[in-house]
Image 1 (cartoon, rainbow, N blue to C red):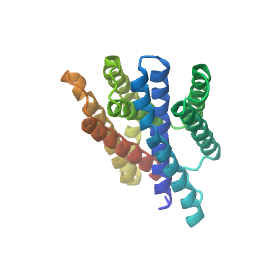
Image 2 (image 1 turned 45 degrees about the horizontal axis):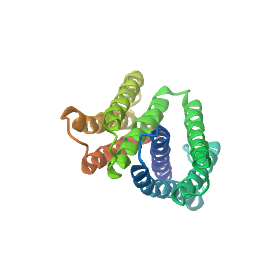
Image 3 (image 1 turned 90 degrees about the vertical axis):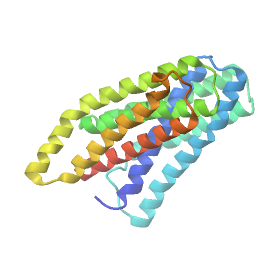
Image 4 (image 1 turned 90 degrees about the horizontal axis):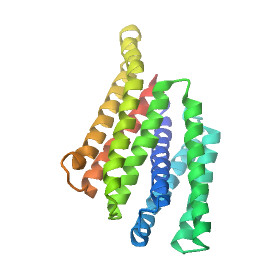
Length: 256
């Protein structure tokens, strides 16, 4: 593993979280449950998406230019899809913020950006299906982490939709459990490699990743279990744990 892989891994984690969050927010917006004021506040939080995607793409390209090393995490088609999504999502956001065009036209732009995100998700799964542990981490980051990120932004936007506070954490927890159960067998294989090949690094990274994933979901579920409203501080802490989990997962399978 080259040291230049580390920026790539962070870039990948940020991209997956961001696109996953946009997908979830798009479905919430399309559901029509947000009033105009809530929707406007949600859109005001979206610049964090553009910042994270810009940072992710910059990390990737800067690493390539400085090191001139093609990382194991480099996917040409995937980067193209991220760029297309970035453009389409920004076009929608700009139109919505400036009320450009009719409601139907802006909804169409949102659907196009959503489809672009779903294409990225589908492609990401296809290119990772040969190693299910990697695929499960991709699902955990994009869908579970993305749902957590979207919920965090909704909390920041002070939404009033109680169903969101109930269904999003449950959905994220179900996804996390599925990823955990499907990924455990391959973690067992990594444990066996510790004895046979003395490869301790991948095993430790994956175990820590799964532990942080469970911790993030546990923190996320706390308001639901205590029947209290989620607060931004708790949500941000859970999101930080999720990002660390995603990063360690990427480090783990890169070391294999």
